[in-house]
Image (cartoon, rainbow, N blue to C red; front, side, top):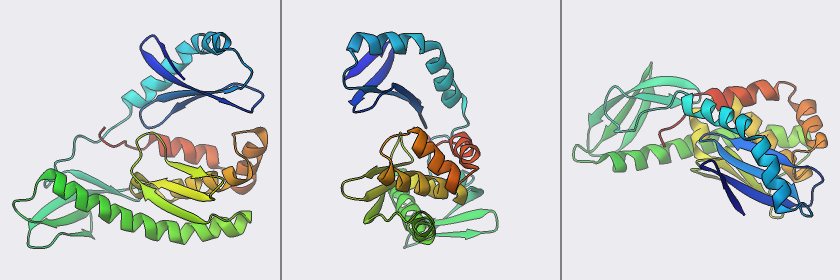
Length: 231
């Protein structure tokens, strides 16, 4: 169900839970509410209207966050890799390559290539990098928690850093985590693994996060505060 209040779309999901949970999610301020199955729609709407001022403040934070300009993949653009800022240098050649050297990200592309073609290559470059990082950190957190995932993939997402399917034991990681600091990736890995143990953001889920990563709140704020992609 979708509510539209003061021009803001709010996604309503009814679940087998006891309390209402309101979320304003990065990176673009998508709003959702998890509500008990038995709660009338009118009661949910009243709750959202009471919280409307808070919702707007949270959405404003995302609106004001630094955001990369639209990518043209030309020399001089900022280029982020695992939390570090580089400056793009575009050279021309027969094969696509991307090499980090000092503070430069040297992209070799065909002279006649379009921004879309360059973006496709760069995204796949990010994908391979992220796969290496996940393969490094996922076993660490599986060992610490005793929780295993059966499979994982990367994909480009605009509203979530990660998501999981508890039945299949599978995790999807946002491709743009390749731009963020390693501790942010570790936070998302732990967060999704713990959802296999605890479906919702219950007190038990929070206590597990506290147990395994006491600084997770600071890391979460860092992740959501880092420069966002052009949307």
